[in-house]
Length: 99
Image (tube, rainbow, N blue to C red):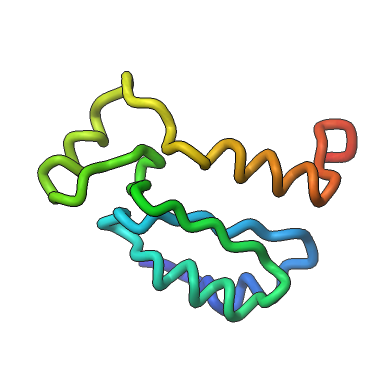
């Protein structure tokens, strides 16, 4: 299904890279994010302990985790936005310098 290898592609990027994952992501395990970070050692890695694949804080049990997928009332996982904003500010990435 995937026609490219993320481990190879990430090495080719010439821009700051933030790799984000959650330890409760049941679709893409945090080990994948760690592998990407290893391939691009100058990237930044943000792994949020209770975040799942849809960027929400989720319980450890599968049924509870899946229930968050269809609940639009749930906020984004704590630490996600602050982590992204910190990365953007640190790398001077603002709307004025994005083409």
